[in-house]
Length: 81
Length: 376
Image (cartoon, rainbow over the protein chains, first blue to last red):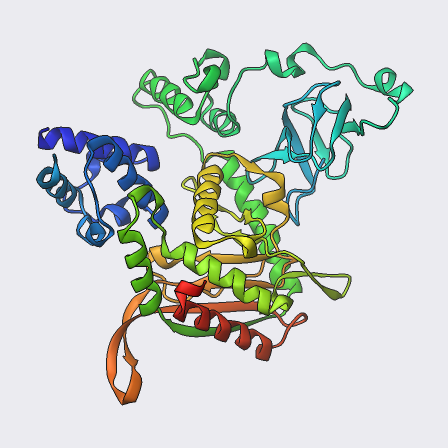
């Protein structure tokens, strides 16, 4: 799976919780939760969706690393089975 | 027309889920009613048979107006029921209405989308929220580029009005007092981390569930904070129905309740919270969840707020607020200074119902419970 496939999966997940957001305007380095006003409940749901779609285990201890779009793509790319 | 909030004066019948002759049991959803805040699924508190429907979808009625007659199974049918029931037009029959979720209906109204022209992708062809959003996008794409931006949704204005009325009443009638305390969350977060490390991501528990559990347990020990002020006296509620402030993406907030929260384990509390937030944000709340809250909990920690000074939702007598967990210097044992994750918990309480001494005891108990999360 390429980085753009992973980004597409991320965008699909974000659209479910923030359907009003224009993801084309999302800076890769921006703090995802702040930029899209995602609370901890929605963030957990978002990660559950990524886990189920990509088959990647995401330990709770790693949540802090997943702050931006670029960090998320990098993290998931490294953990893809 | 049921009252679905302290300041609700009227509601609009959105749809019937039953028809005359249907057998219903306590807890069944028999109708959807539109309020200023949201469409709410109306549960029935009786088991019996629907004898007649007295309102039609679209009717706006004052709270207290009868909208249906339900006959207990051991009662004889009313001879006048069928004769006096106003004939319902064909469009009032659920089977002939466009099948759409309450949220989809509301969104369609806001966005000016005709539900008749949408093909639903939900179960049995029900039109869901995303179907309406897709239709709105297509509609917008077909509009001229110079079209003016849409006006703010009417539903948001309605919700602000409902919040304004309730909060103005609160500030007018309730003599608030505020207390706060800082809670060392080391034990609670360590326990959660250990607990979550053994769980698949789908069943992990958020700190919010732990806090709700602690509040519910604390209120059992300080019941004067759990109830209502009515007729110049405090009415302590027998169950803790925890109203949880949930912000909505379109603006505004809802405060549905986790019912009988004092009976729930942490796992059950997390499941209930997940269910409640999901349904609040998709417009599928039930009437009992809207009307039966006995206390409110609000958590603004996700937005970086450290201390919450809440406004009590009348006629309740208390609101518990939580802020962000932040690392702070903390005097540890034997005079040592350390850094600990610290949460500021606040209590806004009605001084007619309790005094500061009792409120302080509640915060002390809350702190104690969070120091022994394994026992929660």
